[in-house]
View 1: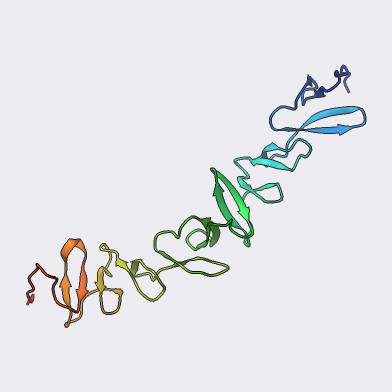
View 2 (view 1 turned 30 degrees about the vertical axis):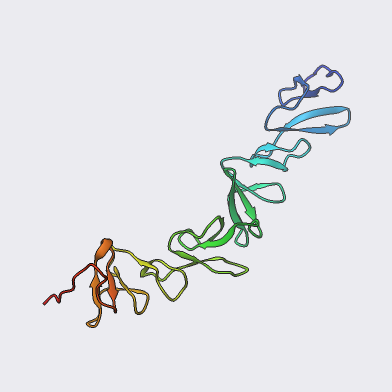
Length: 200
């Protein structure tokens, strides 16, 4: 027990029982009986609302995900999408307008809101998910069935014009076009300005 002096009107006790005109950062104002005290925010908050321990305005490093109901967590739930807004992580049931919904299978299938589909994914107009992975052989693609480019450092480095897929080698009736450092299996012969030959 301790005795403290009464604060002047419009002043409150802070966490050290000093009289202050405004609650310090990371505290909120709690009123009871004849006292107005500044209490610490919940540990998940970096800042909290003036009247509530749990109503976070920003999140701590240990609980970086801001929930739409005002509290912070260490991750979004399995049915929420993580979205980075002005450097802060937030959790949404649905992604904000103008962003795309993406499930990151390389990161524990975390749901993420993105501005555009990540590399090796294509756009799909679907309610639940907008970015779908390309076939494993593709470097980039525009749909599930075909490739638009191939990884020149993998065994599937040849792009087949006839199938629009990445293959390990050209067929006997295709010409290998190696111009511009891209390997294309062409069914129409060599492009203008180049010469064709048969490699024995």
